Length: 316
Image (cartoon, rainbow, N blue to C red; front, side, top):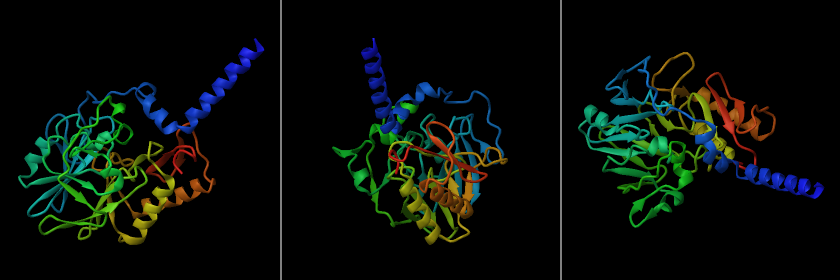
């Protein structure tokens, strides 16, 4: 009996060690069961800004020929951005794919539209298939996902298992190097590589407006820095580079709602929030910050954000 107990305890400890080592992947696989969720809220959305264009999508005009397209009834409350020039338009993120966003885009503009996703997670890439022209950041990791002319993200790049969805296969029309300039006609955007949340994350900077469209790198509520591919050192290196190179009055248009006390509206932050994130990362990486929770560990950032991180060996 003692040997059986010792054997069971040894196997359990080994199992716990393996689970801890591969925690980002284990938590991703278990997410649908550990955190069951209603994908679409049956209740009507109550917007603080913008208007509903049907029973699902919200459209908010930001000025300067730019629209935020939200999914306020989707459980993650995603926002994508339609950025218009005189000759072409960029759709930054394609929505979750829970409903087809292309009709809303066509309602707003007749310009040719190129989709660029901030990263490859399902809630940003999921709505891409109705679009003919897709641009992708040109990195070794993204090039590796091409086979037979089709781009297909891997299971843990896409994470569609959260909503039980399979990765799409798409044709990439345009590869964009980090630092590339996109000419929309009378308006230019700069492509920035912003690893941290994922290795292939992208932001678009509008130098004339001093707007940065930044996806999931930073947003109000809880930042996810514990999923497969996340890296705290990359997070901080990107934050410090943006703080060093962008104007101090840059506005950050982010991908998930909502700001504290603001209600449902296109979520934004500023460079002060980015400095707060940089300070929080310094404390976390120096083991000076005190987390709460078992997994992920949660750290306060400021009044708008907390950061959820994995164990040090999971996302160094």
